[in-house]
Every structure is written in structure tokens, then in C-alpha cells.
Image (cartoon, rainbow, N blue to C red; front, side, top):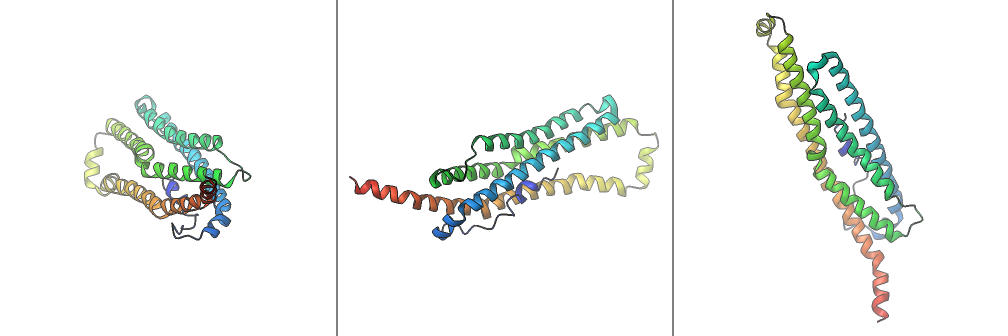
Length: 224
């Protein structure tokens, strides 16, 4: 699974200007950027769902080769499928709340602001629903492989391993250092996406939302 896709989904979006953005430009580009974000999230959700299914199939193949002893890998498969299920749920949620370009600007604005708040929450909590299950699946897979390797290893396996420790050291370094750094990097990338892209864009849209509401507010005040 490409665990960087969730943050990189935002890289195709231009950096927003935030609150100082020009209101006329915001109105002119709003619908285009709304559609672009929708397509970006669609591609992300489909890609992540497919990747999760592929990883689950690979895990199942490993389990099949290991036989009954590899049963804990079933838990890893469930974790991976659970992550894929989150993206399927995102697609269903998006379908339920889909708006056409003919919807009033105010309605589309409020829907886009709500969507960005939702995406912000997802990215800020990506560890709990995305990274932790993926990390757990990897730990289960590696622990199962290690347990079976120790049980099935020939009598002189560990003595030979002591004569050539480099491969074992490489595996330990990868598990103890490389993988944790990789997951931390993905967590940091998602927080940066929130800070640099989602929050400034929210500031833009909330400014535009106030501007759209202003004529109605002024009209209501003058009619009193």
C-alpha cells in the first residue's frame, strides 16, 4: 500500500493564499477548484482501496504458503481490509452529499467548507485509523514469519547466522529504525498538508462565505 497517497493527494492543489485572497478571484475559481478537489479525492480513495485489496491478497498468499501455522496473518488481513473499508466509506459519504454545479453558490460553499473540515479531521487523526492498522498488520506478519522461521529452521541455522550477521542486522535496523521513521514521516506529511493547504483554503472559503452572506444580511437589516 502506498502510505504516502493520503498526503500527496493534496500536492496537486495549488497552495491557497488564505484569508488575504482576492474575493473576485475566489468566486471565479471556486467551482473549478471544488471539482478538482473532488476528482483528487476520488482518485485517492479508489487507489487506496485497490492497494489495500492487493496487499490483503499478498498477505493471503503468504498465509497459504505457511499453512495453518500462519493463521495470525488473518488478523493482519482484517486490519488492511479495514483501512480499505474506510476509503469505501468515504466514497459512499461523498456520493450521498454530492452537489451539482447548478446548486446555489452559498450551498456549494457550505458543503465545501464542511468537506474540508472533514478532511482536516481525517488527516490530523491519520495515525489512529490508517497508520496504526497498517503498522499492526506489518508487525503481525513479521512476528508470524519470525516464529515459523525459528520453528522450521535447521539445527545449524543460527550458528551460520552468527558467522554472517549482516543480513540479520539489516532486518533489525529496517524493523526498528526504518519502518518507524517511515510512519512518522507520513504522519508529519499529513500534518503539513493540513497546515499549508487545508487550513489556508478554509480561511479563503470562510472569507468568501461571509462575503456571499453580506448582501442578504444587509438587506435584512435595511428592511427592519
